[in-house]
Length: 377
Image (cartoon, rainbow, N blue to C red):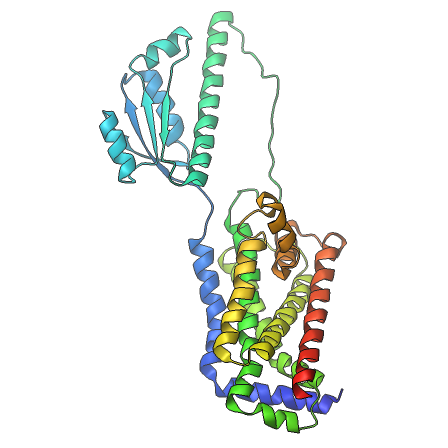
């Protein structure tokens, strides 16, 4: 390999990037825009669930029970209704997602120490959110039942009973259970993979379409020098995108960065270089810019979004699909980014994911060089 020829190819590609400022602006601007959109719009938190109450008894006990819901940030009280028709209309118009129906004798039964039936009607059109809402409702009801039982024992015996179990939950790494803390690092992997592949997917195809590939073939440049020379300037853009994404995640979305910054950028560069090489390989095969960009989109964004474990738990996927996820590089980068950002762990835990990314980058670069050698030959 001749470093002088490699540098000449890198300089030629850099000049092309500088002559096309719109592409450069898009290369830097699109990741920022996507991170802003996904960071603010995509959330899995279920807060402020709108709900209405049909309190048929209007007793002290029923109002106390309702206050248990209004006092939390998980529910948003939208008012009272007075019939099932109003309950149905509130849910149909999305004014409410939950409706509590309290019977007329709710207060009497609670005061008498008997069970009072409470109906909770949930809009199940969004099954995931409905399941979470039912969980919230069950937790509040259980707490209310325990408080009522303790009050009854205290009144009848004069003693304050103690609970058999004293559960003290503690959530590690994401104490407030903010979905943004794991969405933003995950979406970084998706965006970096997509942009990197799109950037380089046009390089070789552009040379073929403009007829300049024949000129390159006539020069002494070797395939390795051509591929690595084209990767160098785009690696710098990928590094800049990674730095911007990390700064936005930490200072704009306030995602805690507990691990090593050096390790984060090291594995990030390995992932970016591998994905850039994937784009070059696609460009070598496609030879048309439109086809190359479409192939890059399909081979990077969809697997990274659906099969990386960023949006959907891999453990819940069918076994054949779980097997496919092992060849998706974004799966390993998502694990690395989340591990470094949230858990603050290093290579002693994440070494296997890092090794796969290194192997992936080496294999894709090797295949790209081999494929280009055949073309030049």
